[in-house]
Each structure stands twice: as C-alpha cells, then as structure tokens.
Image 1 (cartoon, rainbow, N blue to C red):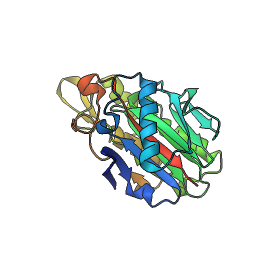
Image 2 (spheres, rainbow, N blue to C red):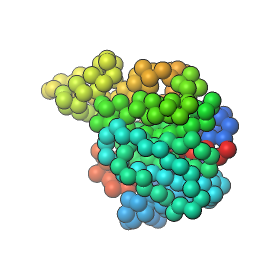
Image 3 (cartoon, rainbow, N blue to C red):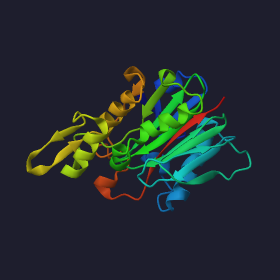
Image 4 (cartoon, helix red, strand yellow):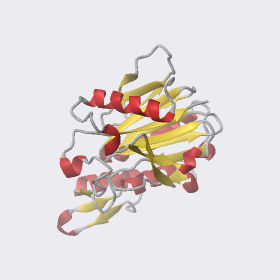
Length: 254
C-alpha cells in the first residue's frame, strides 16, 4: 500500500511494500515538494526536487540519473559514479536500470505512470516512464527483460506504480485504444464510451503487461490517487497543460 508522508513541510508518496525490501527506496514527489521552484526549467525542477529528497531522506551521497523521455521503449543502464554531477541525463530513453548501490533513478511525470521495479535476488532495480505510447510499446516489459539480462529474476521482482491519471479520467480515441489492446492482448484496460471515445486505465494496462512478463500480481503495487482529480497533491498535463512535474525516485542504498 502506498501512503503520504510529510517531511520538513513537504509531502511525498511512499510505498510500504518497498519499505519492506531491505536497501531499496521508492519516493514520489507532490505539488508541495516543488513549492518555491515552479518557474525553473524542467531539468532545474528535477535538480531542486532531488536536493530536497537528499535532505529529507538522507540520500545525499547517491548518484542520480535520468533520461530524456521520448515516449518510446528504449532502456539504458546507469552506472553509479561518485564524481557525477547532481543529476545526470543519460540520453533519450524511457527506462533506466542499475546494478549497483548508491544510485537513484528518476522519472518525471504529470499524468503518465512511473513504474519502479526491484529484484531482491540480484539487487538490480529500475524505473520506466509509461504514458500511452510507451505502454503501447510495452516499455515495462522491456525494462524487465533488460534487468533479467543482468541476473534479475521475475519471481523475485517487486513493482510499485507512482500516482498517475486514473482510468475514469483518461479519455482517448480509437487508435490509442486499439494500440493498447493489441499490446496487452486484451481489452481489459479499455472501456468504450459513446461517440467513438474510450477510457484508458494506464495502471491496469501496465499491470497486465507486467503479469505477462512473469511478475506475480501480488507483487505489483498499484498507484495511490489520480493526478487529474487530486488537484491539491499533483500536477496534471491533461487538466492544466502544466509545465511542472513530479518525479519518482527508485534507489538502492545497499
């Protein structure tokens, strides 16, 4: 179960499931975490948020990496580097993983899903950015495959999805609905409406894909809250065309 916690006046989303995994962290920011830094560029927003996470959760010695998110399915590997700048950008991709401790992996969202994956056997961990395009391309499964190539095992993986837009708020057209159904092999994540429109549940689509990739359903933690409906807690591109972002950090401390 995910829960809200407040540290130094800033509100975060954490995961009890990940809390129970020794040496791993799941931290997702909210609107309040960015307070005072909303007129910055996207990268400077990320740096400001990472600075607050370092202070609030005692993760100051970590290396932090993100990618330039492009709504695809490319996966990159990050290597911990104590000499790196505060937040490294490792090129264009939508998923990133690491095999070493002392590293934080970052995804930015404002309706899309951030999918954090942890393997307790190999200690490999990763995170994916999954909007509808990346979900149609099965980016979470691509991340799982990359982690398995480094010794991870699906039977030992735990997943937590950060808050994203909920299925009752995400209206899409026929082309998007068809792409998601084809990727999932089922229409369970899509509900047809009148007028040729559909409602898409990103969390459900991702859960279906993760199950197909071999991850036990009981180890897939669904998001708490909806970025579109929960105005006081989250930014939303669909609701506000917001340029502000939340970030989710998946980290390994040991």
